[in-house]
Amino acid sequence: MKQTLSTSAISTRKKIALIATFFCAVASSLSATAAGKTDTLLVERTSTTVPATSSVLARAHYDNVAQSLATPTAILALAGALSPEQREAQQIALSDARFLEGTREVTTGKAFRNEIFGIYPLRESDVSTPELRRCLTQTRCYRVEQYQFAWNDTRFAIVDVLAKRVLAVNKLPDTQPDIPTRLERVAAELAANSPLVRQALGRTPTVDELVMATTKTALNRTRCERSRHLCVAPTIVEGNSALFVIVDLTAYRVVGARWTKLGRAQAAPSERRLQNEGIARDYCDRAVPVDREGWKFDFQITSSDGVKISNVSYKDQAFLKSVKTVDWHVGYSWKEGFGYSDAVGCPVFSQAAVVAVDPPRFVPLEEDGKTVGFSLYQDFRGDQWPRPCNYYYRQRFDFYDNGRFRPVNASFGRGCGDDGMYRPVTRIAFAGMTSVSERRGQQWSGWLREDWRLAERMSAADDGALLRFAGATAQYDLIPNKGQWDASRGDNAFLYVTVHPEGRDEGESDLPAIGNCCAKDYRQGPEKFIEPNPEPIGDAPLVLWYVAQMKNDSRVGQEYCWADYVLEAGIYTERAYPCYSGPMLRKVEEVR
Image (cartoon, rainbow, N blue to C red; front, side, top):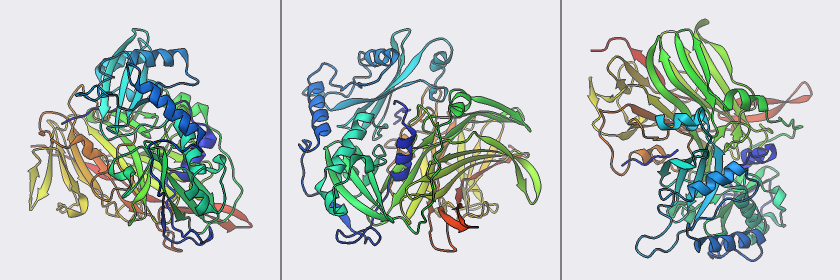
């Protein structure tokens, strides 16, 4: 089985809020003070599918949904400050039979709840098939995103507004797009009006205190996890703790809250970084070609998949179709299982919660004091980092003079808790590599179908290689990170291999969050491209999904995936303790 997948601009303050909260997990009794919370999950006892009357916005939205169910399309259209072309793109999509599939029950014709969540100009990073190339030069195209609540599916249409037709419709099951502003406001009001939140805080919060209201979340043993409802996590930072409020937007209710400890923290003055329109113009709106030291590739800061490099070749030999970081999953509380699925990307007109604040840069790559290649760096950072509930991620691509290549992801903390597990989801699409083998004894044994593995449970060759990818003219070995680089503590990564036939998206375009933030097993998102019927390997290029697992540590002298302010020379200075992850791809010189 294969399912193909892939807002208005979020203000700087909202992005800070998104970063500052996404999943501030929690630990506290109701009677405890904010500085000394214990590990107690607070659960809303009431249950209703109708919004509480105290939430005016929720009631109004519920009524709008009810009205949309009676329309021919059964889809609640996106309203508000839309351009004429956005409105036209939406109208064209709502007239396409493929886009309307799944909006009604087949046997009865009853309407499911469906909403348009976003309408975005198509960007180069969304162009995943040859047919869509014309959108970059010959016409005007938009991406119209629909969420189907009943099935927890995302469906999106690529619309040519000049030709007035839909070029493609794709669906990704069990996936949620970024929510629109109207639902962000509903979530914040539901949280602020919740008796559970008032009880936890000992007061009634204002809506403005809630940050990260658009950040998707999950909470084990609730409908957010079992039924895959659309849930977000508005958060309130108070003292050395953060109250993580779990709002179920499918049922219009608060389902729980949890305190999380933020670790030791010093107060320090903040410096607000403004969004850099130059970054958007130079690195988001177009792909930048690079030709240096035998390597050729294009790179671009995407809307929600970080930096994407594409068309990678080494000494004029095609190597990779593309590489990008799809998601950052951050889970808090091993027992309870809650957290967030984060995105990094462009600072303007973007779906990302943590955005690029500085231009990308190239630096020499050194080993043992010698230059052995070059690296491409891109940082994504919250404006108030390293304050609690702010995040700082780095993407790095290492290009070696001998043909080796390493995609690297790093977390600099600080996050919303001192017990976070960081899992970056990296997608590596090969060019021309159509077979993969793993080590069995002293031999390489080929995979017959798409599959996944946990690196720590695999046998390795003497040089540490776990997988070998091969094509007609080249072979590359994959060597996982076990702490031999960057002073890291190793990745213990999940590895997935899928096929990517020509003409199918398979995650090549910008993806919404594709996995459960807090799953402790292989269900990190890439399995969606494998299950339930793995396809045979051998006739199409392969994609490797690499999901590292890094546990943060706030202990003095043992800091890892962590950051804080330290007092030096009478002023507070940022101090980071990053954790790095990523595999090495090494060329096998002889191909038999």
